[in-house]
Image 1 (cartoon, rainbow, N blue to C red):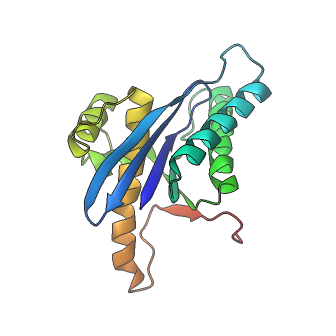
Image 2: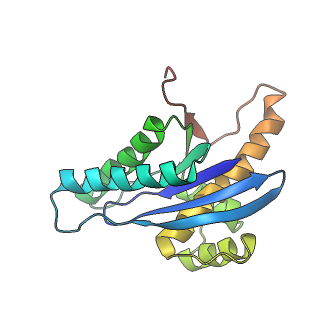
Length: 179
């Protein structure tokens, strides 16, 4: 199964795609969508959508995972980040992909083993978990970490499915599904 992880941002949205086969992960691609910084916010959101949609079209993932937004001290920054996140989710939904959302602490814990890990620790562990992968930058490393977190969470969810219980801390949506 092919999974895309997205680390949304209005200036830079990282993306990373991994192939999941049994317990093995294989790096497919990673990069960043960077809208024009001096463009109007509506134009930047359109560029972000088009960039993510192009990646989805090119690599044909089967599922998407997006990092959730935590509130910042600056309400305006939080709102803009939420817009970028909504745009990433929209691109996944328009492509017909189920999308899961993960808190940053959950992603860090899945990849590093602690929810308080630093960005550098996340990038280092992503490189170890995906040998031979050249990471395009910190946003891409975070996106790959989201994809890895989703891959691990899916395996856990399969185990829980037998009991009809959903693991804690995972929210998912499927395009066109009722809320």
